[in-house]
Amino acid sequence: MEHDHGYKHLFSHPQLVADLLRGFVNEPWIEQVDLDSLERVNGHYVSDDLREREDDIVWRLRWGDGWCYVYLLLEFQSSVDRFMAVRLLTYLGLLYQDLVRTGELTPDGRLPPVLPLVLYNGERRWSAPIEVRELIAPIPGGLEAYRPDFRYLLLDEGAFADADLPARNLAAAVFRLEHSREPEDLQAVVGRLVQWLKHPEQRSLRRAFSVWLGRVVIPGHFGETLAPPNNDLREMETMLAERVKEWQRRYEQQGLQKGLQKGLEQGLEQGLEQGLEQGLEQGLEQGLEQGRKQGLEEGVTQGEAAVLLRLIGRKFGADAAEKQRERIESADADTLLVWSERLLNARHIDDVFGAAS
Image: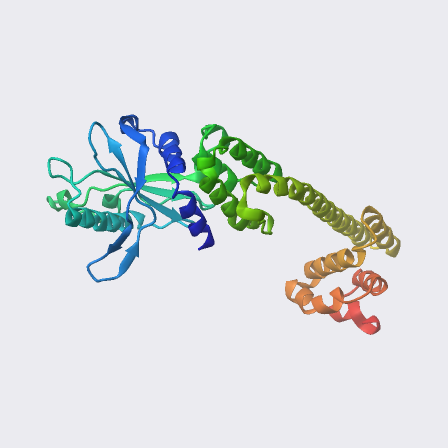
C-alpha cells in the first residue's frame, strides 16, 4: 500500500503526467492535445450496488480548439491481473455514468474519449490480454459480434531497456529509480532530478519524489529508510551520497565473505574427495588442510560440517545426513575431523559417530 500511495502522489502532479504521455504514448493524437492544460478531476464513483470505488487518478486536457475531455485511468499493479481488461472496462463504465450524470459531454452530445492506461512495475513481464474480447469464449454464428470492443494501453516498466527511455523525462526517471539496483545508478538519477526541478513552483513535485524515494524505493532496494529534513530533494541527494559510500563498503564486505566461504567449501570438498578416492588417511588430511588454507580460519568448522553432511548424504543417503545435521553443525573442528576419517571405511552411519559423538 505504501508503494501505491507513493506512486499516486507522484502522478498527482501534471508535469509528471505530461511527461508520461509525451514520452510513452507514441500515438498521433498526442500531438493534437494541449499537455499544459492537464487538470485533475474527481475520481470518486459509486457503483450500482453502492460499493464505493476510488479510481486511481483521472485527468483531463484540451484537444483541438474547444474543450474535449480525455480522461486517464492509471492502474498501479505489482502483479499480473489476467482480467485487468474487465476491471478497466468496469471503471470506464462508472466514469461514463458520472459524465452523463453531470452533463460533461462534447458539444455534439457525445461522450469524451478515454485513455485507459495500466502502469505496471512488477518483476515478471506482463502476460495478461489487453483486449476484453480475448477473455471471452468465441461462439460461432454471429454472437461474437456482440463481444465488447475495449482495450487498454499497457506500460510495462521492466520491459524498457535503459537506452530506450527518454533522456530528460520525469516518468522515465521514475522507471529508472524503480529498477536501479546499484547505488550509483540511483544517485545519478536523483542528481538529474535535482537539476530538472529547480523552480519554486516545482516544490511539491520535489517533495513527492523525496518522500517516495525515502519511504519506498530506498527501503525496497537497500533495506533502510531515508527521511531528509522537510523532505527536500536536494537534502535527499546529500544524504544519498553519504549512504552510497556506506552501501558500497557493505556490499564489498558481503561479497568478500561470500567469496571466502565459497572458496573454503570448495577447498574442503576437494580435499575430502581426494581422501576418499585414495582411501588413505593421509590423503584425507591433506585435502582438509588444503581446504582450510584456502579459506579464513573463521568459518572453517562450518565449511567442514557442510562438506561432511554432503559426503554422508552421498554415501548413506540424504535422510541419513539430515538426521545427523544438528549433531554435525554443533560439533567442534577436531570432532568433525575424527568423523570424517571414520567415514572413509564406515559401512553404516553408526560407524561414523561412535564414541566421539
